[in-house]
Length: 135
Image (cartoon, rainbow, N blue to C red):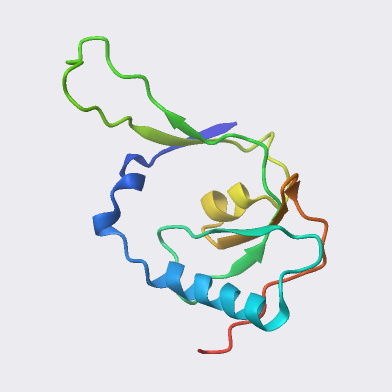
């Protein structure tokens, strides 16, 4: 079953509160500076839902292969000499979504997601994000 949520404002940065994003970015950066990157990991992919606070759970996830941001086609009657902003929807096929994915965490559970990646996709690692230390 696919569930659609309108998220066309995702590119409108003016109204976004970046507090939670800064918190999780600093938390992960502090962990990487203290411990180094986990073995076999090339990059950490952090996704934070708009509703997140600094108390929101940070969950280790695997990267889904399911595309979920879909841009709508412009109407055929629009003026071609004027800029156009594509509307974007999040469309998730929950019946086919892999367990433990970033999409399930961020869209479904509204928690922050960190996915250890190799250049081939999700890293095979036991690494976990540290608990918050209050700083």
